[in-house]
Image (cartoon, rainbow over all chains, first blue to last red; front, side):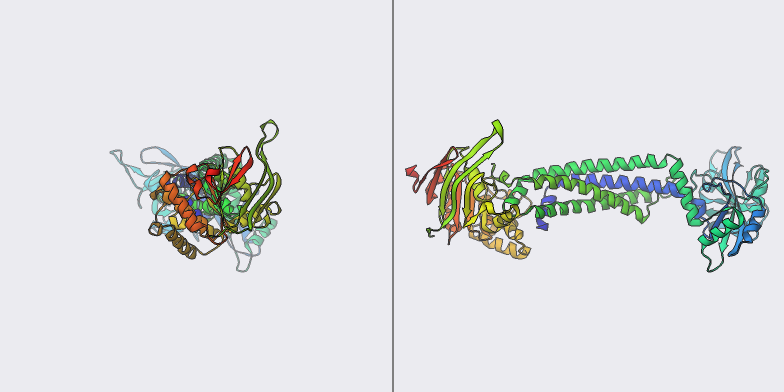
Length: 384
Length: 236
């Protein structure tokens, strides 16, 4: 009877398309909004994921997330290096400094100072120039988006030209010379990212007693990074996280203390409700229109269970197609906006989430119809 | 065709009411009726006399409040709801006033539905359905959809659907009321030619006096009771 169920569904084109539109819309809205939410959340920990080399991030006990800077004394670096199981440990400066643009405007930048000797902490992907050039005088590397956007040079005619290698910019009244353009993930506040050496970054930064933001450490082969974190905490009294843990700590902070989840949650919920209402209503109308036929099938010997299976199959078909179209639409949206400021990230887990949401929508719609058909009196077919 | 003395349907003191309290309506007030195996019995009477309720009870769609209904020796009240549904699928064929063909299926697929409900493979079911369509004179319309067929042709498809699984009892509810006289007559001739055979029994509910002559016996109903059973319309 499966083909009968599918023929009944597809045969009524208008209602079939209506149900599909409802589910597609819900799937699209849920997937797209969740992808933007995921994209924004991934920007909160972009600095961490852009630095894959160290196993462990060491910081002040009170640090709550990556941008919550509570600098350490320089000596903490040596204490971390002294912990058993540490292969190496390097300093990292992270600060928000003002850069003066060629037109006189100021722009806040995330300045990252990497280890002078090893350059650990430097960007992984270079678009132009070499990481090693950071060792030159006043050298800085800027990110590609900012070089073309917020840090772009303003020409005399008012037009803007991308920052290129050899151009200079002023960071907190200190000269910086661009030696490279790199590719990094956008930050939560979309600020330009400027890389330099640790020692130069500390000269850029305002005078403070402590300027060591983090210590990056690598575990010796065979040493579990989580175990190493515990050892560092015991030995130094500092807070230590693996990169993955620090990423989640950062994200949890933003989830807990910002209104982002609620705002996006409302959009997702709205998509879910609208989708449920449209799909449920149309599916229910479709069932009502076919009540006589269901009644006839019942009279001819179709059990309730067989009718339930038919309805579930119909719901499954529209669910799968609607979900696929919605997810496809969201993916197309993501591709179209790939090089814009819009945060969009659609990991495979999100497909599971939107799939589950669509499954719930279809189940609710199907349940309403099943309830109606199960209570259907087959004698309805004898009423002319 | 041969009408045997064996009783296909036996009703004794069947009562059926709808609603409760002041809204209670009595549809059947103690119906006694015997339908013989192999005969075409018509149930006739004015609207609201209980004809449809009576065939619903015979078909196991409605339960009688009182009395007994036995079809081919099986007591209806002894069957559970799902057992009754399966019994209907195996024993009964239906021809409805409004045809009740699925608009998105072809004629052959519509006819195949009772076989599909009995889990006959689709290809085999459609093949048997096509053969049955040929028997009702629609062999060339097997791939047509109901909307492409005339009212008479649709009713022929419905008859083929009622017969395809070889049921022993066919219940027809006003099979000619949506058709003109000529088409109605040809449908009834077809029913006598094709549907009646062996020990198959037909019960036709109608108030269309033009087709009374096709009946072997006619049960006249009034106010929830069978008032007379006659052999010829002239006796009514």
